[in-house]
Length: 101
Image (cartoon, rainbow, N blue to C red; front, side, top):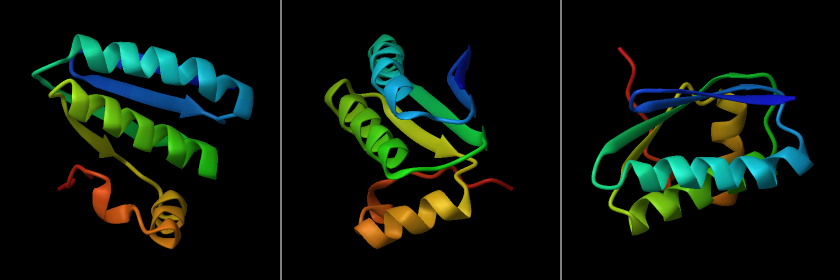
């Protein structure tokens, strides 16, 4: 089960993403992105217990939504596995990753 935790300027995805949940999650994430139009928003992926191509697709959908609403979206805590999956698909350069100290 996947849980979405929102804080000021940040959203954390926690748990195991499952296919059916991702459709509902997309609607919730896009609503949060729209509410941050003209602002910055970080999606923290560090508490995800698994990765999938569907999850990567969801992140790309979020990025497209953010661009259309002038929201500066960044991803934090992306696992090596998810990054490698993005690299295989040739989309890693499009993912705005927050550089962590």
